[in-house]
Image 1 (tube, rainbow, N blue to C red):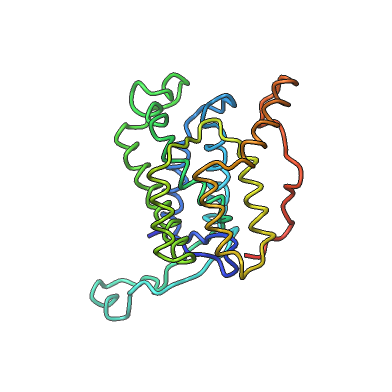
Image 2 (tube, rainbow, N blue to C red):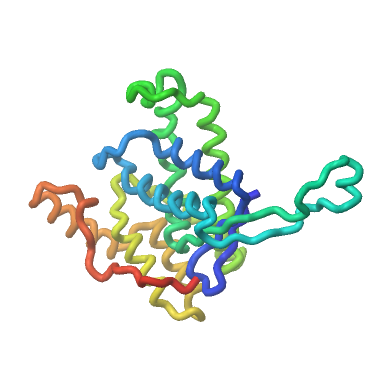
Length: 255
């Protein structure tokens, strides 16, 4: 069972699960993000950020991140009853994801599900690409897997900011008309950097502020979008070929 908790310094969330939990998430992400890498796709940026999260989860399942063991309920009496010797502890893997990154995925990815459905089934886009089709029923399973992950992220945020504040944020989300098509994720990098530069004792308020800005685009986002789109248009580029200043991540993140 996937567990999502805030990191010690409120820098992000720790996603923890066993090998099969992580494999299921990775497979579901690959299925949901589809086969196309078309940079002009309306949800290219959202899918790209989800794949970045997938990268960390996949490497965690390979043992390249934190590993812990936990009691699994097996004891000597149970082994005698079943006449077998089995491990008494299970291995769990962990991956850390920056809080704004995780919150953004929880907000934006569900919006892409309708597009994702086109990749499933006998007549799906995968068959057009000459790939084996994925049963349409898997679409519902993949959605459910990711929704459980996103629910864990909201739960982790709630444990930081409190139930009352989380309810306000989720109400804002439900009543928002914002969409994440062609989202300029350079702004998400800005939010990540803001949190990293914020003192620990102020991160609770910063997380509330960032979450609200990811739900309702502020003027700062619109300015970044305007500048990047104008430059991209003038030079016949995609905005996703461009970088934005002052967004170099530290070599080591204190989680």
